[in-house]
Length: 364
Image (cartoon, rainbow, N blue to C red; front, side, top):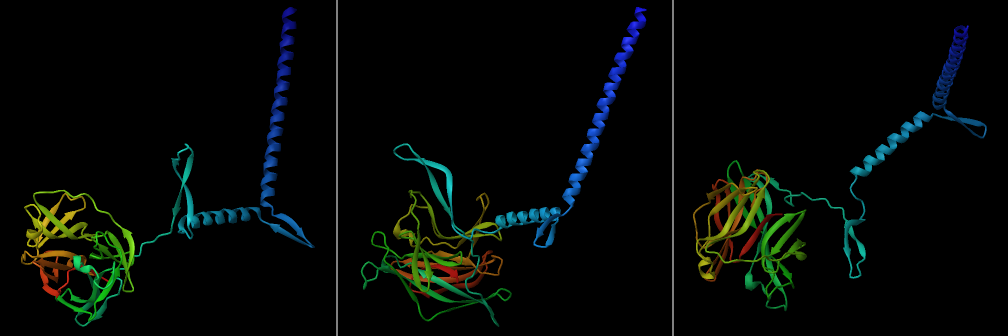
């Protein structure tokens, strides 16, 4: 009797649990169905164009279309911002800080300026003639102590000589013509009573620059005037048993090499008198890190003639060089011009171009 009573209680408990389980399942099923219906209603609402009434008209806006257009627009603006250069000066605060005497921190303001390199070279487009391509060239003088203007106080000067180079690389033809007039460039900048000893001409960023090896001033040559631009300073010098003086060095992107035409080379200690006869006829080549070097002889050795400047002739794949050599021997001064290949083949033997010391040449 007790066992029957116990069974009845267990059955009633199991029925109660079953009823509760069914009720929970039904609730879950109803909840899922309602949830699914709500999602469908929400998706349908999203797809449905939103209606707006303006006066007596009704406008319907497609939500998905607007969202898509917005995403594309924002993406385009981000891309445009990333690609466009700076159109105005921007002032930034650096993450570097300095402390003043009171121990306060101050942000260092850093200005960024728009800058694009001008690759124009040469500055004047060459012309085609029956004898070959005709290039505009110029040479600049370093008159040393003679650069002092004797008629104007605190004024120094240099000569700029312009001309034309005509060259035919297939026929190995070279001809040089000079303008009848020489341009005089003046400056009042000096160091130790000397100035305007311009020893190189270089086209950089679409500008013609000249370098004063006495004061360290770099001048921009514009409209036959010398405009001071940057000041460079000297390093320390040391005495050595032998030396090599370089004034003519150019990097070639074509060959990925440095090219040097030394002005002087000696195995003994430097002195002014002997140095006048230490000219070279060497062309040195070196790779980027100077682990590979080679030497090529260029023409006959004339001890009083030393290289002062050179440039690769355009449109020759850096295979033809035009160079200046100068002479300073017991008061006699002269400048010579020559053209040769990087293998040492002479196309134009040394030709005197004046009794001044011209130490810079460039295609302009």
